[in-house]
Image (tube, rainbow, N blue to C red; front, side, top):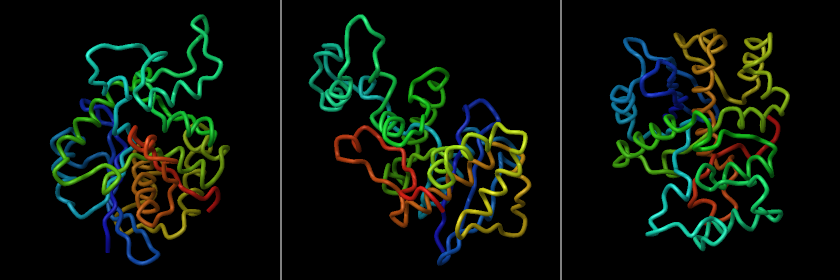
Length: 257
């Protein structure tokens, strides 16, 4: 058996973080435990302790695990994005062919990463910007968790960034991804998704109903399932080392289940 843990990360002071633990055996991936915390919410210390108790596991987190290039910058001063020669900034500049100082910028490399641009422009998936509106606290928490776990978990080795909506969009199409949280038939849509995921089973005590009626619990399972796909080389890799160095959101290779 192999352990896969999905984390739908919420704010460090809130109660919205959910964690799912799945065990894989052969072609079966079984949900053995998931929820938003039994005795208390998944604040930082309980979450870190829990993840550290599975050093052989693979963890998929729904939150930015790297910062935008301009935030990571160590240059003594900023030459501005128009003149910067840092390779990934040059990558952004090369894609913005219609740039003009009087136009709204297409990209802002102090809030975005290359992975978000590629998902949007090449796969028609619009993720949240790393430091876009409302994302700052979540990104900061994810950065803290990565640091606290860095002796056991290494990015893109046994710790990966995932995006449940992107996984669902790739496997079931954009229309399903658009309605699995927002339609009047949300629970039915989620049930259809779970029933349609090859190999997914639920162990006794891990009730499907818990996730059908809770966004965070449902997404935590999808995070762990995506990590399982990743372990089988069933997720799209970054197109090159440059993009990989900026951080990567892993999504399934296939566009149908």
